[in-house]
Length: 438
Image 1 (cartoon, one colour):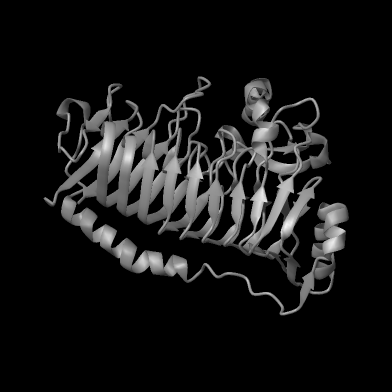
Image 2 (cartoon, rainbow, N blue to C red):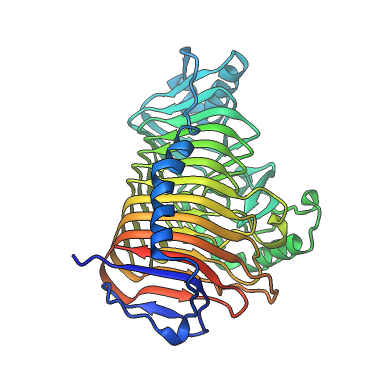
């Protein structure tokens, strides 16, 4: 395969965008890109090499799975059959109160009438053969809890599995978590727009969080798993399927390890794994089959995210993705707190729409910076690689996001039906420092 390098120093795309047509036909529309010479291919190659060889190891050494006491509690099968939710939550609470350890759910299919709440020091272990089938009744997910919904903090129905301000916690084992979204919650997709618009306006107007009350009478779907302001997290080996909304969603979290997970489709908007405003996150050896994005790195929406933490030190490697309407891996579009120091490598993507996507719109503000991607195989896609600053749902503000320092190498595109590389910028928001090598 012919080696090639393209260095786009300070680039702004016209409304028509700039394209590299698949597969790797090196066509740059010079009328669409304006580039200076202060970011050379040699400088970029040196910076890229240093990031992979020095920066990435420093990040990985900070990401350490939690260690738990050796004591264990096995949830009684009879209690599980009578009230599985209560039995598991009581075992988690008992383990937490007695210093932590492993709570084991034995094989079997169990109906849960509501949420599970993770607590500090506890590893919830779902044995092989476990299927947790969560309720499809919204009232079972009361009372309201503090969550981030599409990048804006509010009070809403509890996620199926939830933790708030806990540390040293885990979900492990080869069991299955089933949200059964296709039974009921999928119907809320068509009813959510008024509440979605209301919450976005509340964020825009910086309405106090405690006044952002949703739940009964509203139609914001709960996440599959949301961990809010937690530290030292391990998610390992289990399968999550049928999530009503985003599948696995750490928010304001630190030190997260996710490995050998399987995520299977829920409704639309069933993103596989969305680290949001979180730092030191490792996602490896996972298999995502979703309608929407596989992994979406986020940092909050618009004014509600300004001044809050962003996402940094995110590593995605050795994963496979199959998606219908989303991207294999993306940043955004909720990225207003900023996203930096992202490493993605050795992944395989099959998509009916986007392979890799870096997306924002003029409401967002924020920045994406220091993004390193290598050894990615986009087997199928409509758009293999996209940079867009005009993502949908723009509300009319003008706070352009900043994009700079993207390093992408050894990307292989297979069947790309529309465009290989698509760059859409704004006249006053340049996409700066993009380095492509293969």
